[in-house]
Image (cartoon, rainbow, N blue to C red; front, top):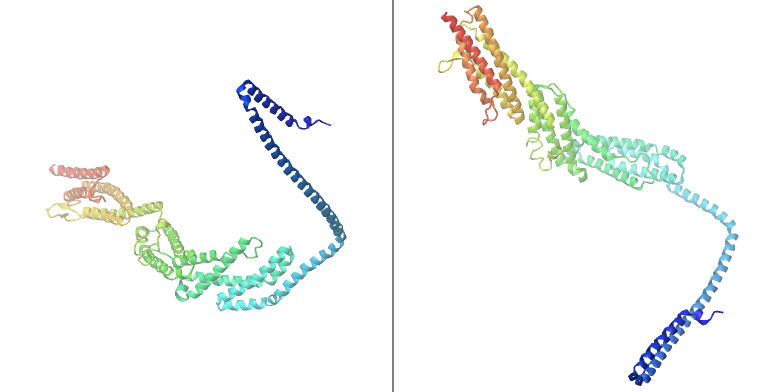
Length: 547
C-alpha cells in the first residue's frame, strides 16, 4: 500500500515549508539575544494561532463529511427510483406488445370516423346543392331586371359553395371528382358572363349613367370591388385557387371605361383634312373633352373609391388619346391652314382657359405632368411641313404677280406714279404685304416657326428677284425685235428701278426682331443685280435713241 507521503504530496511540502520557516525564525531570535526575553510571548501566540487553525480545520472537515453523507443518501434514493422506473417501463412495454392487435381495430375506426365526417358535411350541404339550379334561374332573372347587387350576392353564395367542395376534394386528392362538381355548377359560367357583360355595358356608358342613373353605376363599382377583394384573399391563401380566379374585373372595368371615353370623342365621324372642316372638328373636340371632364370631376369622382383616382386617369386617357389623334391627323396631307390649326390647338388652345386650363377644371385637372401634347421633334417636323406649304403658296402667288406685272409692261398706257410723280407699280406692296402677313401669322404660334417662315420668305424673295430679272431680259429682247413694243418701255424700266428701290428699303422690315433688321448678303446681291440689269437696259435704250 502507498505511504501517507505518497498519497498526500502537498502535506509533505507544507510540512517542509513550515519547518523551514520555523528554523529561519529561531535562527533570527538566537542571533539577537535581546529577543530571547520575548520567546515566551512568541510561544504563547503561536499556540493560540495553532489552536485557531485546528478548530477551523475541524469545522471544515466536519461540514465536508456531512455533505458527503447527504450526497450518498441522495444517490441511494435515486438508484431506488431508477430501479422502480425501469420496472414500470418493462411493464409498459409488455402491455404495449399485448395491445398491438387492438391498434389494428382502432385504425379501422379512424377510417370510418373520417368517412363519417365527410358524409356529415355532405348531408349539411345537400339542401343547398339541391337548390343550386333554382338559384341559377333566380339569379338570371335578377340580372335581367338589373338587380345587380342582389344577383351578385346569390352568385357569390353559389361560388362559395362550389369552391368549398372543390377545396375539400383537392385536399383529399380526389381530383377525378372535381370534374363532376364543375359540371354540376356549370351554370355559374353563364351567370358570370351575363353579369360581366352588364358591368362592361355600364362602364361603356358611365358618363351618361352618372348624370342620369348614378345608382346603377355605383352598384357596378361595388360589385367590381367585391370581386377584387375575393381575388386578393384567394391569392393570399395560395392553397387552392378555384377555376376562373382571379377575375381581374377592376382592371377590365377601368379599361372599358377609358375606351368609352376615347371612343365618344374620336371614333364618331370622319375628320376632314380641309381647313374649315378641321377647324370645326377641333372646336367640337375641345368642347367635348371639357364637358366630359366636368362630368368626371363633379359627378363620377363621388361614385368611385378615392384610390381609383378617376379624374387623374381620365385626364391622362384624354391626353394620350389626343396625342395619338393629332399624330393620326398629321399623317394626312393637310393644307397650310390645317397644319396651322393643329399647331395652334396643340401648343396654345390645349393649355388655355378654353380647355385644360378651364376654371371649372382647375386645380384638380393638371396636365403639366403628362408631357407635351406634341413632342419637340413632332412640332419641328410639323413646322417644316407648314413652311413647305406656305412656300408653295408664296411661290404660286409670286408667279401670278410676276405674270401680271409682265403683262402690264405691254399696256398702251404709262405706269402709275406716286405722289411725287415717280413711276411705280403695285408689285413691291403686293410682295411685301404677302411675305409680311405670312411672317406675322407664324408669330402667333412659336418664335421658331416665325423664324422658319422669315428665312423662307427671304429665300423666295431672292428667287423672285431672279425671275423678275429674267422677265425683264425677255421684255428687252422683244423690244429689240420691235422697238414699238412695249410702247412705254423706258417708263416701265424706270418703274422697275423704283420698285427695286422700294423693295430694298422695305426688306429689312420683314425681320421679326425689330432691333436686328439683318438682311442676308445674297439678297442684297440679288437686288443689286436687278438694279444693274434695269439700268443697263435703260442705258442701252437711251444710246439707241441718241443714235
